Length: 254
Image (tube, rainbow, N blue to C red; front, side, top):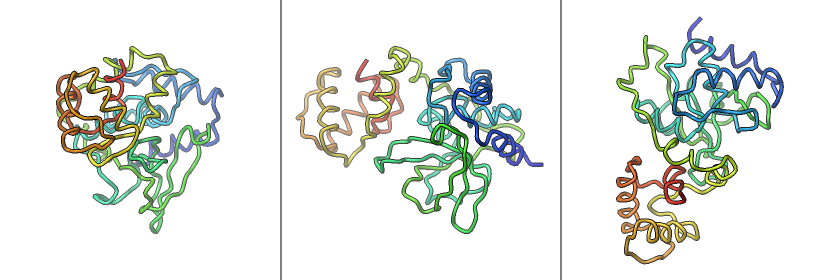
């Protein structure tokens, strides 16, 4: 049996698991056992889709193939660091891949699961915290709801990632917020060059106030705003990609 098949088999053993059941408690325990030292410690009341993925890999003795964190955004940051994250158009989706979703078509990442099979253009995915249970989903490969795909190094004796550099922003900024406040930050939209609207205005006001940058509040994420965001991310030791995600929002709201 391949490692991907083993992980999928473990995930399938949890089908039907509901929140606050003994099986749910086991999932959270596996996650907390495997998580990185600076990663969030889960409770039974936390959103648990990413923790489910980590727990399945950990139970299969393959925690070195997955970022052991509870945040979809952090998980993607690690996969990008390892060169194993792809946009759907850049790769085929195969068994054992990790698939990330964007429900609101706003480029934010909301959910994650493990691909079970690709069947004639539709993929079957097993997910934790799907309507508070472990369940299957079927989704078309071309769906705009798919935000990206990560490919664990199943074909290697190790992750082949080189040094695993900690994504310290989660601990540095998020740990200073309560869980309820973190949920608010999670709900903020992903902003980048070309975005527009009230949240861009809020971003610009925060940058002017917190960073003492001098520029106009226009509600347009233009080239000037992009340069200011890059400068702020550099100052705060964030990934300097010009994308305002949860870590950048948290650094501005702290």
